[in-house]
Length: 83
Image (cartoon, rainbow, N blue to C red; front, side, top):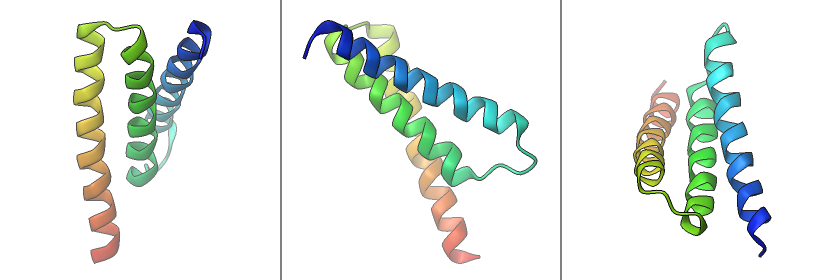
């Protein structure tokens, strides 16, 4: 894949995360499954992009972001199944 494709993957990931952030601030009620799923997908796409264009600070941020989103997603799914 050419360099611009990796950039495009990172840009899509960033856009997804911005959409999730905007949604969490504008929605009357936040669907935490969707919110955390969008954050997880966006951060994973950025990790893919960063694996080609490596930046330590950004990579660490995205790994932590993915972990938080994964925990939040698991919690949201558990609360839905127990309700």
